[in-house]
Amino acid sequence: MDSVIEVKGLRKTYGGQAVVDGIDLQVRRGECFGLLGPNGAGKSTTLRMLMGTTPPDSGEIGILGFNVRADARRMRERVGVVPQKDNLDPDFTVAENLSVYASYFGLRGNDAKQRLRELLSFVALEEKANANVATLSGGMQRRLTLARALVNSPDLLVLDEPSTGLDPQARHVIWQRMRSLKSEGKTLVLTTHYMDEAERLCDRMAIMDHGKILVVGSPRELIETLIEPHVLEVSGTGVEEWVARVAKPESRRVELVGETAFCYCKDDQTLKATAPENPRLQFLSRRANLEDVFLKLTGRDLRD
View 1 (tube, rainbow, N blue to C red):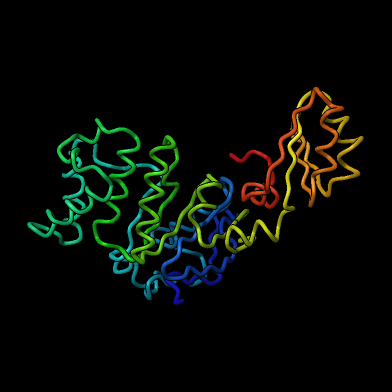
View 2 (spheres, rainbow, N blue to C red; view 1 turned 45 degrees about the horizontal axis):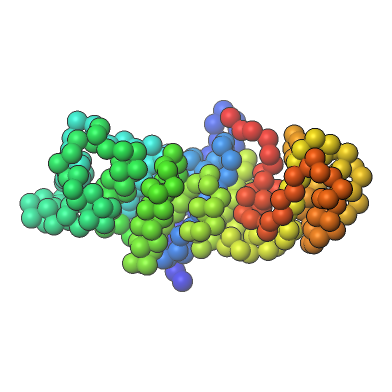
């Protein structure tokens, strides 16, 4: 598969601190690629450099065959962006928000009207065409922002935390629309703090921290190669004593967070068998997931 995004040696510093520290990145045509990391990892700065709004200190960026340093304007004509926070015009109706944006790409008259009908149908907002943006729910506003990003029929769609703050129903609608776009051959770049979202949607992903790319791969590859297959969560009064007495000799890796022990192991049967003799403790057995990988690589400490 040919590449839609090619990044080599990308670097950006602020105040002598490397925010993006010489990363290489490749996004293939037609895939959903996730860029994950804790707050301050360098994701937003990376996206701004990809879109040509922040100049890199060094490195090369190619998007859709364009050199971003030399031809950012032409590149952006073929890219759609769903920003982290909705920036719709609150004084306009739903249709007016789309029609004004369409005019930036030369869409007017009947062509614009037809495109707007298609987009409103795609995001299920046909009945809200004449509604003021301020009257829309958060989920509706997010869907309108997605529709606006699609006005120019982009080849590449960048979605910065597209479902943050949405209820489960609205999140699933956004996910379904993203899958539909990918099935049409669009290339998607997604940032998210929801690991289940990344695991469901991404074909491949990069996890970055402190300005560096730590790993790249499919969600399944990362889970299978970087984390133990079983996780036993044990919580309650006396968990520290249980960890010292039982878990550490048996489990490959144990993380104690407050009153919860996360035991990562190949087989948790022996540890689960201690549940009857520890009635004050709660035992939850599950398969390892992408969140476990993320926390192993980036740690559990809070980030500002």
